[in-house]
Length: 236
Image (cartoon, rainbow, N blue to C red; front, side):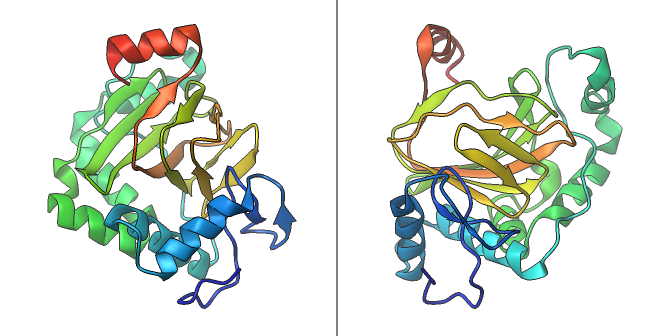
């Protein structure tokens, strides 16, 4: 399927079927209805602003044809102690003096549509802060609105998000690195789409820090006894 306003033929990878962004061939990763619905809503101008920004940013990443330079360090993280082989991640997390420089690096890997959206929401990147979400995973809120919540996730190599389901639509654009779940692997420039039919446990690739832009229109629901307990206590 080609969206009405697109000039490229690359599809969307993710928790559903589509076209692999780097190989240009069909895959079986998610029900095609999820991708079709997202593209149709974008073409019709029916997406809330955060979702529309994500799709526009995806198209811009496809247009430049290559992954951005990797971002090696986090910003203002409040993560718990990590294993020794990730000491550099945690050391950088506690270094407040380099936050401006690191946000410059983060801005550099963002497509223009996303960078402009963040600027409209916050004025300056330096006003944004990372907060520990789970061990090895930090979240930075971009916007919280009726049309959809938007945030960045920064995942230490090999870290995992707890298994969860969805009460609505969730779309994730990989800005750097990659992650995998039961449906497949998603690399920089690819989108993962999930809805109430999808339950998964995303795990970041071990090669480099994974940076993801996430938009969702309903909270995720952690599954399993431990997940439900964590969500109840910490309101993840």
